[in-house]
Image (cartoon, rainbow, N blue to C red):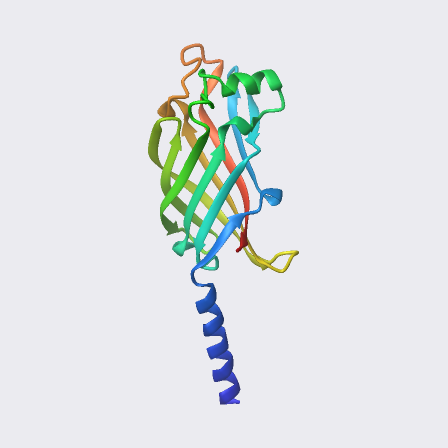
Length: 190
C-alpha cells in the first residue's frame, strides 16, 4: 500500500513538473475583449475588439506564476455602428493607422484568495505606456473539448481614456472619461 501511494505521489509530482511552465494561447472562439463608456452622462455605449491574441506562461493552476502578454488590433473595434466605429478609428480616438495595436504585459500577480487576484502590468495605448492593474477572477483549469488543457479568467479594469491620449470631446461631457474594460478569456495549452 505504501509503495502504491509513493508511486502515485511520484507520478503526480512528475506530471506537475511537466505543466509547471506551460504556455497557453487565447482561444478566440471562447474569449472576448469588451468595453463600455458613458454617453451623454445618462447611459453607456458598449463595444468590443474582434481581433486580439494573448499568451499565458506559467502554471495555470497557480496564477501567481503567470506571465501574461496581450495584444489587441485597434482597427477591429466594433460597437455595432459603422459610422461610430470609423470615427473611433480616426485621429480623434485610436489613430489606428498610426497605432494599429494596443498591448498589456504583466509585471506581477498578487493573490487575494484562491479565485481572485490582481494582475499588475503595463498597458500601452497609442503612444502612452502606464502601469495598471486588472482585477481577475480565476475560473479554473479543465480539459477542453479537444483534449487540451484550458484555463479561464475574467479580467476587469477601469481606465481614464485621457491618460492614454484618447482625448476627443474632453470639455462637453458627451463622452465619459472612464472606460470599463472586461475580458472573458479562455487560454488553451500549446
